Length: 272
Image (cartoon, rainbow, N blue to C red; front, side, top):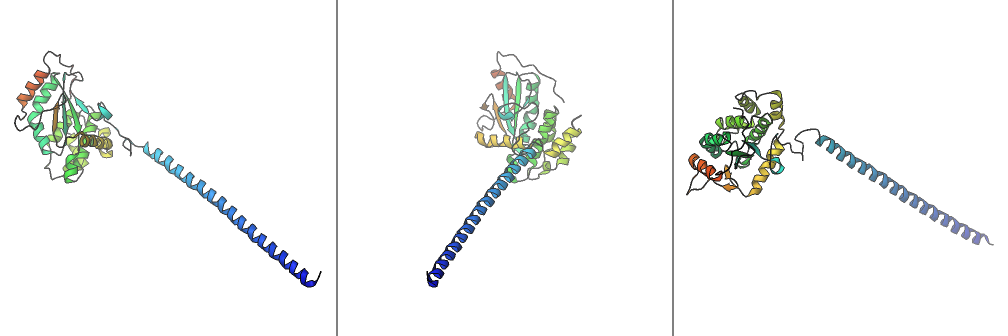
């Protein structure tokens, strides 16, 4: 074999070895990339799992965490969005959608409260309150929400009716978001004997029932009703008619007709 041929074969072998080395290095880099990608994938999945677990842990830490609704004690109806006042077995039900910042609601309450409470006290009527935040949405602010939450806190304590009346008796001007101040709501609670306790104060300050109020407002917005107060007697809208406006006397007559031949409900003592 000539030196020239030997040199040519050697060069060919060297070239082949060099090419194989390159391919081996390429394969090694590819394998390393795959492993690194797999490790990265595991780390990402682990991080996501950690986030989910963390979210779940934090979600259970409060009574009104995101996605969790804390209804007041004794709330009834779909999703427990209704606060009932009066005998549970009363023959008629008055449904009221209202907002603590709403001037028309205040006017309704001042006009009809003695009649409604008289019917409640005699077992003729159960009132079902749906609390909404219409004015917050229309004018901005948060007083409708914070007042409704505080009313829910009063329901927890068994003092909803009394505190409800205090809020309307002290309703600020519509443009003033006074009820957004929790100290104002706590001060007004002092007008209801025994209501302003540490648990009530914490409930107001923590917004314990905020998500419940928001859910109640969402239900109102989906109901087809567009104004507050909306007042229904046994499911029939009885308020707002220009041709036959509701009066305390006509409300009493409507309830008497609806209850004819029916026994009144069993009344529990209502805190004053």
